Image (cartoon, rainbow, N blue to C red; front, side, top):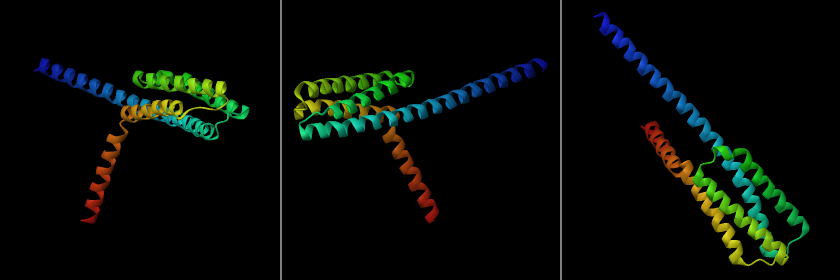
Length: 163
Protein backbone atom coordinates (compact mmCIF):
# COMPACT_ATOMS: atom_id res chain seq x y z
CA UNK A 1 0.00 0.00 0.00
CA UNK A 2 2.76 2.36 0.95
CA UNK A 3 4.40 1.85 -2.46
CA UNK A 4 1.15 2.61 -4.29
CA UNK A 5 0.76 5.85 -2.32
CA UNK A 6 4.30 6.90 -3.24
CA UNK A 7 3.68 6.00 -6.85
CA UNK A 8 0.45 8.02 -6.95
CA UNK A 9 2.14 11.00 -5.27
CA UNK A 10 5.00 10.79 -7.78
CA UNK A 11 2.51 10.63 -10.67
CA UNK A 12 0.59 13.63 -9.36
CA UNK A 13 3.84 15.57 -8.99
CA UNK A 14 4.86 14.78 -12.56
CA UNK A 15 1.42 15.84 -13.86
CA UNK A 16 1.64 19.06 -11.85
CA UNK A 17 5.11 19.75 -13.25
CA UNK A 18 3.92 19.20 -16.84
CA UNK A 19 0.96 21.53 -16.33
CA UNK A 20 3.26 24.20 -14.85
CA UNK A 21 5.64 23.96 -17.81
CA UNK A 22 2.75 24.22 -20.29
CA UNK A 23 1.31 27.23 -18.47
CA UNK A 24 4.70 28.92 -18.52
CA UNK A 25 5.03 28.27 -22.26
CA UNK A 26 1.54 29.68 -22.84
CA UNK A 27 2.47 32.88 -20.99
CA UNK A 28 5.69 33.18 -22.99
CA UNK A 29 3.84 32.47 -26.22
CA UNK A 30 1.27 35.16 -25.44
CA UNK A 31 3.99 37.68 -24.57
CA UNK A 32 5.90 36.90 -27.78
CA UNK A 33 2.72 37.31 -29.83
CA UNK A 34 2.03 40.72 -28.25
CA UNK A 35 5.59 41.86 -28.95
CA UNK A 36 5.39 40.64 -32.54
CA UNK A 37 2.09 42.43 -33.09
CA UNK A 38 3.47 45.67 -31.62
CA UNK A 39 6.47 45.39 -33.95
CA UNK A 40 4.27 44.70 -36.97
CA UNK A 41 2.13 47.74 -36.15
CA UNK A 42 5.17 50.06 -35.87
CA UNK A 43 6.75 48.54 -38.94
CA UNK A 44 3.70 48.83 -41.19
CA UNK A 45 3.17 52.39 -39.96
CA UNK A 46 6.62 53.32 -41.27
CA UNK A 47 5.85 51.61 -44.56
CA UNK A 48 2.57 53.48 -44.77
CA UNK A 49 4.52 56.75 -44.60
CA UNK A 50 6.87 55.42 -47.28
CA UNK A 51 3.89 54.55 -49.48
CA UNK A 52 2.46 58.05 -49.15
CA UNK A 53 5.79 59.57 -50.08
CA UNK A 54 6.22 57.25 -53.07
CA UNK A 55 2.71 58.13 -54.26
CA UNK A 56 3.64 61.83 -54.09
CA UNK A 57 6.89 61.28 -56.01
CA UNK A 58 5.15 59.17 -58.68
CA UNK A 59 2.36 61.70 -59.06
CA UNK A 60 4.62 64.77 -59.23
CA UNK A 61 7.35 63.02 -61.25
CA UNK A 62 9.92 65.04 -59.31
CA UNK A 63 12.24 64.13 -56.46
CA UNK A 64 13.25 66.98 -54.19
CA UNK A 65 16.04 67.01 -51.65
CA UNK A 66 13.39 67.19 -48.94
CA UNK A 67 11.72 64.04 -50.27
CA UNK A 68 15.09 62.33 -50.47
CA UNK A 69 15.86 63.25 -46.86
CA UNK A 70 12.43 62.05 -45.71
CA UNK A 71 12.81 58.76 -47.56
CA UNK A 72 16.27 58.29 -46.02
CA UNK A 73 14.85 58.89 -42.54
CA UNK A 74 12.02 56.43 -43.14
CA UNK A 75 14.42 53.79 -44.45
CA UNK A 76 16.66 54.31 -41.42
CA UNK A 77 13.64 53.96 -39.12
CA UNK A 78 12.68 50.72 -40.85
CA UNK A 79 16.21 49.32 -40.53
CA UNK A 80 16.39 50.40 -36.87
CA UNK A 81 13.06 48.74 -36.06
CA UNK A 82 14.16 45.55 -37.78
CA UNK A 83 17.53 45.56 -36.01
CA UNK A 84 15.86 45.97 -32.63
CA UNK A 85 13.21 43.31 -33.21
CA UNK A 86 14.84 40.83 -35.57
CA UNK A 87 15.05 38.14 -32.89
CA UNK A 88 11.23 37.97 -32.66
CA UNK A 89 10.56 37.98 -36.41
CA UNK A 90 9.78 34.60 -37.96
CA UNK A 91 11.98 33.54 -40.86
CA UNK A 92 9.18 33.60 -43.44
CA UNK A 93 8.29 37.18 -42.45
CA UNK A 94 11.95 38.20 -42.37
CA UNK A 95 12.45 37.17 -45.98
CA UNK A 96 9.35 39.14 -47.06
CA UNK A 97 10.64 42.16 -45.14
CA UNK A 98 13.99 41.92 -46.89
CA UNK A 99 12.26 41.77 -50.25
CA UNK A 100 10.32 44.97 -49.51
CA UNK A 101 13.44 46.71 -48.21
CA UNK A 102 15.38 45.78 -51.36
CA UNK A 103 12.54 46.94 -53.62
CA UNK A 104 12.38 50.21 -51.67
CA UNK A 105 16.14 50.67 -52.03
CA UNK A 106 15.90 50.02 -55.76
CA UNK A 107 13.03 52.49 -56.12
CA UNK A 108 14.89 55.11 -54.08
CA UNK A 109 17.99 54.73 -56.25
CA UNK A 110 15.85 54.99 -59.37
CA UNK A 111 14.17 58.16 -58.06
CA UNK A 112 17.58 59.71 -57.43
CA UNK A 113 18.95 58.74 -60.86
CA UNK A 114 15.82 59.84 -62.74
CA UNK A 115 15.04 62.95 -60.64
CA UNK A 116 11.72 61.37 -59.66
CA UNK A 117 10.63 60.27 -63.11
CA UNK A 118 9.64 56.79 -62.00
CA UNK A 119 7.37 54.50 -63.98
CA UNK A 120 4.20 52.93 -62.69
CA UNK A 121 5.76 49.49 -63.19
CA UNK A 122 8.61 50.40 -60.83
CA UNK A 123 6.21 51.69 -58.22
CA UNK A 124 4.07 48.56 -58.63
CA UNK A 125 7.09 46.32 -57.95
CA UNK A 126 7.54 48.00 -54.58
CA UNK A 127 3.85 48.06 -53.65
CA UNK A 128 3.31 44.43 -54.70
CA UNK A 129 6.17 43.31 -52.44
CA UNK A 130 4.74 45.44 -49.62
CA UNK A 131 1.24 43.97 -50.05
CA UNK A 132 2.74 40.47 -50.08
CA UNK A 133 4.46 41.31 -46.78
CA UNK A 134 1.18 42.49 -45.28
CA UNK A 135 -0.52 39.26 -46.37
CA UNK A 136 2.33 37.22 -44.88
CA UNK A 137 2.02 39.11 -41.59
CA UNK A 138 -1.75 38.62 -41.50
CA UNK A 139 -1.37 34.89 -42.15
CA UNK A 140 1.44 34.52 -39.60
CA UNK A 141 -0.49 36.42 -36.93
CA UNK A 142 -3.71 34.54 -37.67
CA UNK A 143 -5.61 37.79 -38.09
CA UNK A 144 -8.40 36.37 -40.22
CA UNK A 145 -8.89 33.32 -38.00
CA UNK A 146 -8.92 35.43 -34.84
CA UNK A 147 -11.33 37.91 -36.40
CA UNK A 148 -13.73 35.12 -37.37
CA UNK A 149 -13.46 33.63 -33.89
CA UNK A 150 -14.19 37.01 -32.29
CA UNK A 151 -17.14 37.52 -34.62
CA UNK A 152 -18.55 34.12 -33.67
CA UNK A 153 -18.14 34.84 -29.96
CA UNK A 154 -19.84 38.22 -30.34
CA UNK A 155 -22.75 36.74 -32.26
CA UNK A 156 -23.13 33.98 -29.70
CA UNK A 157 -23.23 36.54 -26.86
CA UNK A 158 -25.83 38.63 -28.73
CA UNK A 159 -28.05 35.59 -29.26
CA UNK A 160 -27.79 34.64 -25.58
CA UNK A 161 -28.68 38.19 -24.48
CA UNK A 162 -31.70 38.35 -26.77
CA UNK A 163 -33.22 35.16 -25.27
